[in-house]
Image (cartoon, rainbow, N blue to C red; front, side, top):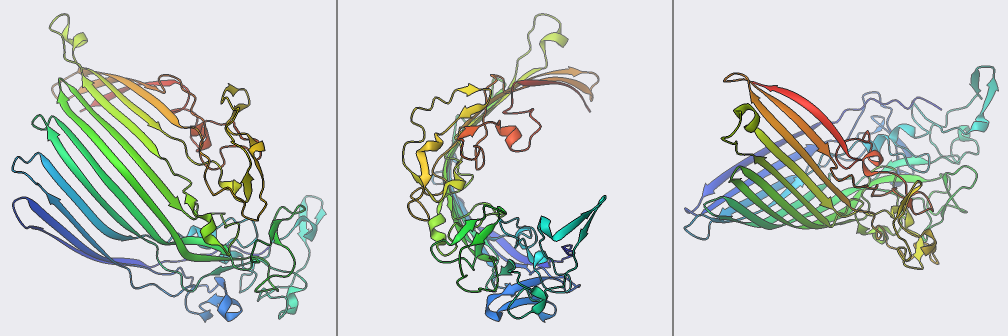
Length: 490
């Protein structure tokens, strides 16, 4: 109940400088320095309410505090890179780079977090000039064709102990850590590139790494140590058992913090073939590993907010092996037969193969008591594919359980797309191109992979990857499908 609409403004600007030097004939060095400013969101209507633990209650931006969180003005980002040719043949190049990169602060967690409790964002705090309260079905009365909400009094502080208008209600509130800072990344790479046959083929192999710091993490700072939060069997909402540890006059207190970390390490290799008898192709392989405490920025709170490091594990999008290949073949025309039929043909293909992603993000708090893949055939039936045995897991003997986050991976992906083009000259500058494009040529079943791919408690994957990710069910990766096209090029 209440007006949750907010109009907010965020100010941001940056300055940068860069230069490069050719130190020797074989060595080039480039550098840069950037300064970024991403200010806190604010509203001229003075209707953004934030719970501040050190102040013991809810404050209003523009009427009690100047900003939702103090602005961060120390975002200096240096960059350095080099390119070096070790030999005089100029067929071997070594490149490397290091840089700091600040990221735009995401607004969604501030205003639309979608948590399991009612503390959805700054706009839903039960205080200020536009206070918002969450109602259950018992609060309104039914009349023909309309709902009539019972009269209420505004609880301007959210604290039932100090505000008589709050009655006996215990409110969930939203907070932003007053040490909130801009997230940033250390990105670095080192690679070697070698050409063969006067540049006909180029092979490159390298290491790519990234370290994320001060990433957004939501914590319930009113959770009891050791995990006192439970899911209410009546409302389905996240509630707490017994007295709250820090602020007993409030319910859940979701606080947005900049304490998350991530890291990514990858071996990347590329082989490119340039115009060999009309054939151009590229082959790319990546081995990678991504880890973090929390990947998603919406609706996710650690099972134990007092022990964030227990969440550290594979990222939601961790994909270990990824291989792709492309080729384009301009088929040489024949000297026999009509030229319009024997010339202008082109065959293209894109092939993509990669491993699956973690599917067990909701299994923190469980014990793994058996091999989840034992006795599972992964055969397809009308209900989908039983990917894991749900009986291999049981509620943890301890609050966090022995199953680390994102340890079980879903099915991989395999797709071969093929197209045939026929270029037909019309005039010197105009030509028509007839296209036949085939997707998933071998009609492989690509099952959904990632968090939420298996049904709750079933271990069954009942969706394909495209539909699971919101695609219309056609195109790459879906069941074999084909399209015809005609282009006029001028």
